[in-house]
Length: 366
Image (cartoon, rainbow, N blue to C red; front, side, top):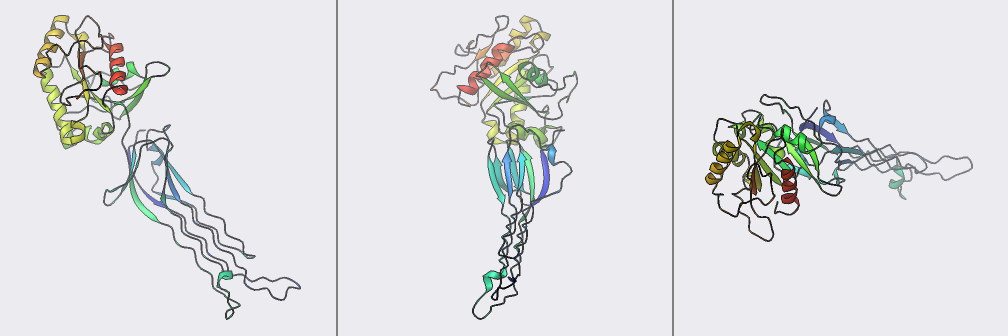
């Protein structure tokens, strides 16, 4: 089960109490106090593990607590330190204060390990309180209490390419063709109910991660549909691939405008993210219809000049258009890196799309 938001109470361990003890041995006339110190309480750590991609392991858990320190013992023996608690989370997890919403930790790197709460200090045994005027101290310190925080864990998936589109536009089909992901694919809206990650393997040395989120509908940034719950998962993606349906009754430019507006309403950072456009279901129309729609769309985007021609050598059956990516250059973030008609079913432009996305991820300013 995919879970990306949980609320927890976490506590570090309490320090162990110091010991009140007096040395008592046969033939030893001067014993004196020998109570040892209590052990420190366990700490709370967060550790990032890329082998996990959901917060489902915290389902049904309300309170996580480190172990308390053990009390001290006679003969000046220290109590054992309490076992620390390590909370393992996937990359992209934010730790927020449950009341204020303040971001306390932002955990993004695999292997990252951060101490969150310190365990309570152990109390001093009565051996520390001996003096010339108090040779038999009967007092030892109690251990200090640990810390407790009410927190919320919020997961934002980290990917190189994020797919953005309306429901039933072919996002799941595309990610299943390009990557190792196996999402549910069906001919109805909202087949994707949870975000999916897939690794697109180009060769033994080149790969990138693609994220698919549930379809966005108009008003998603205001809470309609599933978009509001999952739009945050593309906040961390380096590059966006807009997927627009060639066979839809709405004009391509209208679909594109609505998607851009929803992203802008949700996050100004997403509005400025570099992107490309894939025009899906090219197999559902004739070649002439596809060419006509693509040309009209390019004119709407002011991309119909010569510099947007076949950088990636997409299939000759349908024309495709791309922005030149040789660096250095100043990229206009209001324009796509490329626009290409595709079909995941008949494989039109699928391989060129794979290499084009690798190119912008590894070489472009993303």
